[in-house]
Length: 309
Length: 240
Image 1 (cartoon, chains in turn green, orange):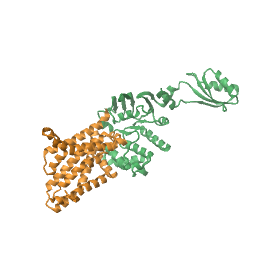
Image 2: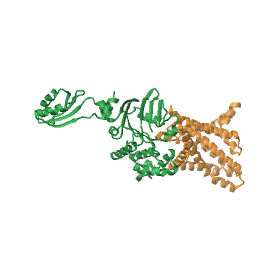
Image 3: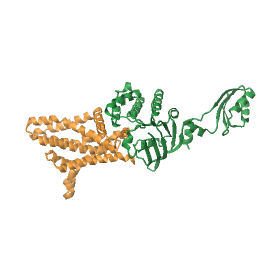
Image 4: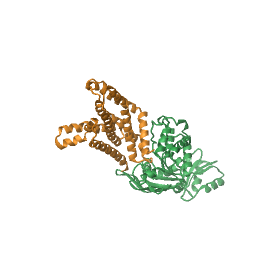
């Protein structure tokens, strides 16, 4: 099931929380939804899941609008809201049965679905406890289990891995990736490596507008522009090396990072590469090149550039 | 199972899980029992009639405070801990949520009334009680109770604070229970009659006497309907 969002806007008072978003998510795609706090991520997700009304524009799920066929469309959506609200006085099994019944899972299959979710989310040891007695990580698993209880075609997950320990994060990521093969997934997060690890596509929004849309590599390529190399050269003094490096035509900027280890950071002019020249220089002078690493633009930097201004 | 029943069942279970149900049951039975059977002046033995009319009027009197205590958390708590979002993004409509909550509270009320069955058995063993009047009295209690539940549900839909919800329900209930009647007594003519018609107490009185008038029925159903309608409206407000 595809999600098509066109020109989606939402105002809170005079402030525009979401401002003309348009994008599409296809079946089998995992979309990472990024943005600083207050950028409009949760508001957008609330509109997609039909919790709050749409200001302007449209959300089409499959071929039906969420505003007109909300009841029917919601059957196909599994939603984990921000902060993972739960009924703390309910036992895990009862809660999952309750969610299954509300989502229209047929009577005979409820128990089977609940058992399956308990297994998939690793809740077996805790399934008879009250949710209020569980640790944060287990509550998060319960939240995921209720979202997937009716085997929805669309999963909307608002920060699914908060509160989990590193092992659990890896498990949940694997689970999401596995599910994402057949389903349409939108997940929001603050953890940037997570996006790279799980998502096929990244959408960065800021102040309610899309500022970037593409795969991680795509975004990197757009942001890169200039090559940056980390270089360590031995068997000479810092000053000599620095003087020689500066003579290379393609070098735009040269920074000394570590005086004792002779480490430099070299930024090349746009569209050029200095790595071959540096190697040739070392061979010529008889220096030993012990490190030559191209510095990848990190997603964090891209994120900062796009959202801080 | 329909979504309304699923929601009602969960809500009813949570009344009992949170001890709320037991406390309210004990208070309600203790209060009505004490005034009906034990308190010297005005109890059944003092009046010397095999009739439950004392019980009915005390039970009705206790509703304006017990029922807001029962309904205060229905929607306010869900709003506070955020489960309302969870509930409304499931495949249910706002109306089903409102009806489910209403049904749960009315069922709770019915359970409380069921536990007064010993009163009925006792009165029949004491003397010749009028079964028709007793049935009519219970029916009246269910109707007034449902009206107060509807008012309480609306109060609960307005806020995420249970205390505020309780107080709002209490204020509205006090008007329907006492103040409209007091105003009607001090106002002559049409205005007085209008206020008399708005008073839950006066409508309940005639039902508890064993007189089933369609006007009373219409009154209670209108209050119930209005409360439910306004509750749904205030849930839908989040869409703007």
